[in-house]
Image (cartoon, rainbow, N blue to C red; front, side, top):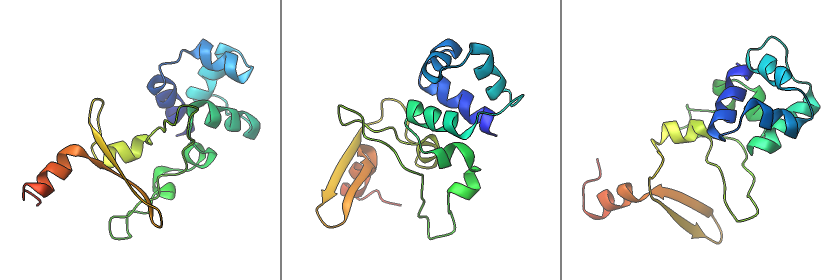
Amino acid sequence: MLGKKLKELRKENKMTLEDVAEKCGVSRQTISKWESEETLPDILKCKKLAVLYNVSVDSLLLEDDELLDEERNGKYIFGIVKVGDRGQIVIPSKARKVFQIHFGDQLLILGDIHKGLAIMKVDEIKDIVLGKDE
């Protein structure tokens, strides 16, 4: 499972085996072996990979059903993301799948000083405003 996640994250980040190898201080063959699960990275390399892909170590190591709790009235924990130097965040792939967020979708960011931030698809807001909420 870890190998599949590593390969997906590398492709999502448009990186080559060589790019990842250089950032992690290992060979391209080592990255290939991790992705095929012929070998596994040690915990220090997992930390480097998590930072590189802007995900938590937990999201790399845990199975999706261990990371997500779908039994709590439709509420999820998708892990921790890191804010980039220009304020960007990466929405975890599982969250994008669950909420059907795709490349090019417009998102509305709402905030409450006491409750935090909320992100909604603009299309969903239009449906609510126009009375098309199901």
